[in-house]
Length: 464
Image (cartoon, rainbow, N blue to C red):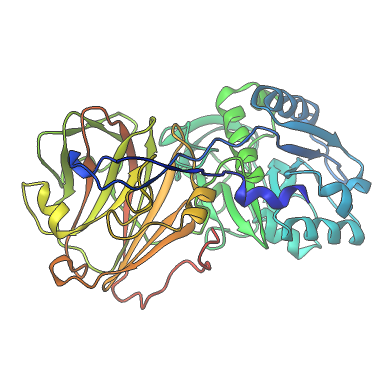
């Protein structure tokens, strides 16, 4: 079936190499080098479904036209239908994702519902737009897929959308907030504990919000074997002329088809240690290189080698999440478990680096515990977005165990046995590798796991 290729859509070819460049410019032992995963061929095929059994939005034709245009510009094919008869196992198997575009009411019969459930179970993708949440109230499975059902809405008006995840392809083009006009849905339940919230409404910026100040408006999740994205925006015709909304919609579709990866596990309990609000007050630079701050909360490596490290306290028992992006074949990494020092080599000699590098030997490329243990390359390659796109690491330390997730997929599980490099306490830092390397970071956040009794967002290894 066509959509079962989703997780393996990126392939990585291992080629022989005479040598590789080690951290901070030291010559490496010759080894096998991994080329960066090729960007997938843009041959995705999506079905836009816009049947209505209740209120019908006059923006639906423009929404279909917009998705067709986005497909033509980005290399995916769009079919559109209001015929529920299209929901058969054989027909759905031809599509990488199905977009419910402002559907309303009871639009599928039991046989069609079963076909769609089977499609998602086989790895299919779903993208719900606006009134997709006002659909199939008597089908609990669908309620879980969309994330939350519609409750009510005030009049169309401007509002502030607070962007919570700036690595996801649906929101990576946005700043910390997004000013737009739309019809803002209230939902019957808050989905935050079940989905990964991408953006939420500031209820103080408009009238009529009734969700108590925590008002998700766009989210994603992996659900029953497939991928799901939902945005509450898209009521108005004008939305589909807006470049920012079009990019938002495109990113959601790319996630749903598997053309782009993201960490869509629920995320709760993290505190920012660097974003546009915190600044670098608690961070210290070791070595001559530096990190340049942009107004949107992005840190970019500049100049020679060095280490930007978080100096408030030594850490133990934590989950570190951060977003990173390569420009090309660049080199950087995240150091953990090292003592405070103005010498960046202390991190090299006393800590561990989780590598970020498009090409190197397996134990020295993205996802590796540098020089000690390669990532699971098949899992890494399936989850990795290419240079120019954002990725998300979770680096989890519990005792001497170090686990690494990339875009929600576990790619490394390493246990330290060297007492000189104990992970039970130490600092964290970002590497500035060299003059020619340009790597960006943002949204660095920490969750204290002490007293958490090992609790974690429940996902099996190698499943985002």
